[in-house]
Image (cartoon, rainbow, N blue to C red; front, side, top):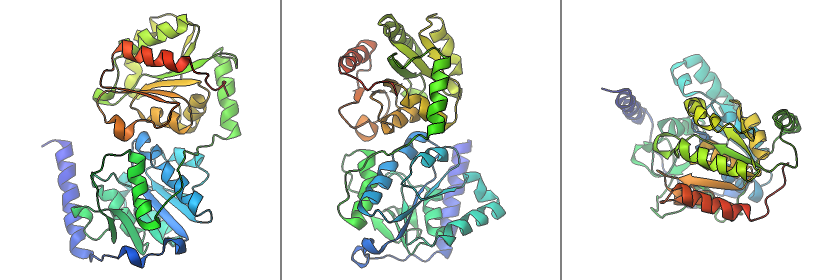
Length: 359
């Protein structure tokens, strides 16, 4: 039996045991006056950067409609640093999934959350997937109203369940539907990530050290992607080669799993192809913000670039572009036919449009 099957069996056992001790109570939507909610906890304990970033418009929508509302966010430690760039979040709680097996750490973290006395907790799990950790932590927050999508496994963790519509829409809208269910209409959401002056200065010095000036047009290229989502490195090499011949500079981003791909790009031997270091999220964000254009498969850094309002060419090979693709006219999505020629055609069209100056 493989590790994933063991993990699934363990989760099912925990869900079953919890169901024996948790009384299922259902609230009526009509009984909730959202305008009286003063403190809200958002729960998304996710180890994927992109999934976390895509929940941030919910923060924006809530803060726009209710400027005085106290917003807390409970996330996994891995990428919680990105939440620190969102000034609309008032309180960040960090809890590793491994803490479930460390009673002292776990109880301490839960007690800290409970001290805030949240009025409502929102389980931001994807509507099509049940997350035991998200649902259980939402329950343990002791918020009197606990909202999330209607799923058989909820077992009383939530007490106000939102029906799943099965309607095709972007993942941001799927998250916002949870808020709309309890707060009716919400303002148009935004990504409001702010890079502090220290990291902006660091990025400026970093790029200067790589011989990138303010007058250079810098194209960020992320060569990663999980499994089948990754565009071929040979294609990225061809695109990079073409761009450098057109006098653009390339800043190559990569993750731990992509280090073995870098020699293919290094063989191009151009001093206009620059390789970044492995960086923590806030410094990575500062470098991405310094790019005039960003090219990537469906990756966490791609979603980060979109959130930072950097024009992005997103290549979708094995994921749903309608659900996860970057919205907005300044971005382009290549899906279905992801050939080198089609990507290059879209890139040419983007480069003919005036792009923001290097910041």
